[in-house]
Amino acid sequence: MKRQELKLFAVLIFALVPLFLSAKAPARSANLFDYVEEFGNLSFEEEGINELDSAIFAMLSYISFEGTAAEGSKDGVPLQELSNRFFSSEFRYSLRNENWDIWQSCIRMLETAARCRRYAGIKVRGYVSLLDEEEPAQFSAVIFSLTPALHFVAFRGTDTSVVGWRENFLMTCQSQTTAQKMALDYLESWAPRLPGTIHAGGHSKGANLAIYAAAQTSPDVQSRIAGVWNFDGPGFSRNPDMLERIKAIDGRIKTCIPETSLVGMLMRSFDSYTVVKSDNQLFLQHDLFSWHVDGKQFEQVDELSRTSRMFDSTMNATIANLSDEQFHTLITVLFDSMEEAGIHSIQDIGDNMGRFSSALTNACLFSDKETRQTLLYIGKCLVKNFNQARKDEKKRGS
Image (cartoon, rainbow, N blue to C red; front, side, top):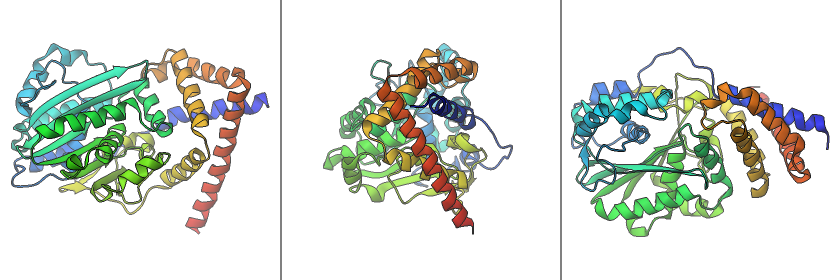
């Protein structure tokens, strides 16, 4: 086992972090806020739910509603009243992720939507939020009752916590994560109290949870689900049982991904999807508030970007060749190195890059023999599949 090869592997993995967390484009196009301002006077009776409404509900699920009466509420709190309580609460000023750009956009969306006729009277209920660093597990969900007979069950995606991102990746090598079980239990416990039609959805990991819950729920509940909204969520390509179960709801799953999708292409288990134009670049296209809006739908583009196609080919081909144990080893090394470096949220990476680099390098160099062999094998697979993806792209352009 060559020490230099392992050191190079650690450096390459570490180099990807700032790539995915940087680079914004300066463009400004119509977005979700413009949609709310333009069509916010139309009620859901006049204009039914669409992909933009679903994206808004998915993003509102990121807001912490503790102490606002939405927590555990059976009857629901009107969104306008909930917004007033939220902005008058001292808790609003001590939010864990207040410095996260997406979080700030979610808060702004709450304030904007609550002023509009379309959203002001929506009943918000059933808010729950759990974080277990030991499992690890992160789960949060909330229900938006648009009318007495139309409901949207929104599952929160991954926030900036390292716990959440670890679980995001562990989804690929476990038949059922703690969060997925919680999502299924949540849907089944609330469905009897939600008469009429149900939509479910989320962003990032939240989309994965929505699909899992909808595919695994009882036939009675499943028959009432009109749509499952997947906004750039990772798939289930390593879970044959889920791939089979998804067939029962496949026609109801609506997938939207940005033109340079990275998260949404992980373990991709869908062939039909809408590609959306974004103001941002690379990993930051994961932010739905950067997606372009055209009237009452997202602005579509014809195909994924070259970067996304190569990422899809390289990562998914590599992941497909790994056993669950090998993939688990990779995730364990990456996230254990973060913890050793004192990194508890994505924002911490910038201030702790030196320690993270050192911890990751040491993990690759001084782990047990089996771990070092696994990491070297993964590194070789990545190089091989990247070269193949590059050749495929060259042929595509010729």
